[in-house]
Amino acid sequence: AQTVTQSQPEMSVQEAETVTLSCTYDTSESNYYLFWYKQPPSRQMILVIRQEAYKQQNATENRFSVNFQKAAKSFSLKISDSQLGDTAMYFCAFIMNAGGTSYGKLTFGQGTILTVHP
Amino acid sequence: DVKVTQSSRYLVKRTGEKVFLECVQDMDHENMFWYRQDPGLGLRLIYFSYDVKMKEKGDIPEGYSVSREKKERFSLILESASTNQTSMYLCASSPLGEDRVGPSGNTIYFGEGSWLTVV
Image 1 (cartoon, rainbow over the protein chains, first blue to last red):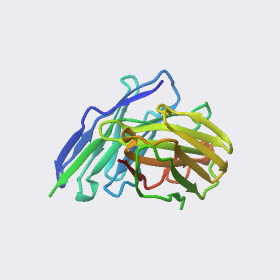
Image 2 (image 1 turned 90 degrees about the vertical axis):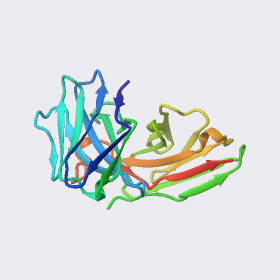
Image 3 (image 1 turned 45 degrees about the horizontal axis):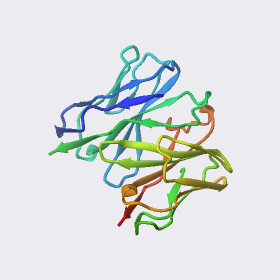
Image 4 (image 1 turned 45 degrees about the vertical axis):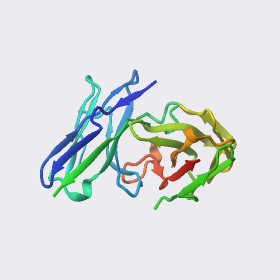
């Protein structure tokens, strides 16, 4: 079974600064995907960034980037130039390659509440 | 845009009541899921379905059942609600197969959640 661990229940950062959220996972699979989801107070889950395990290059989406260390099973999210709208709960999630028997089941971490202060 | 709609956003039920949470998706997705979200525990999978009338248990199925009579609709049923089922419930759907990933790279789409309080 896969597990995802987020060891930081809460984080805070000043506006315009950079913050890194940590995530580790455990799996015996070699072909999988990792995600960061954002959940603002509205509770709507929003995909922030996605990383394919077979790609060595770290994914980047505007101010969001990841540090994917496959051997260490680590997948951290870096938010640069933090904005007030980044305040939300952030979830790290794992999915096996859908070509297997995952049926698209995501396994989530516990979540990290990020607060961006003005 | 993909839309996953949970018909009830806020419910208050009494212990022992039978509770139905409904979820509808409009993208012809094969897979549908029910997750439960609790502070400090993240999202935990209750049940999922990969086809009409097909269902499989997730990580915490006890006390729940599901129904999928039509492809677009996936219902979560609490046969006899208990206070420890007070939580937020999230429905999600996804297409089968990575070749159907959307342009944003998303593989799963969530509803807005249903807050259930059992008193």
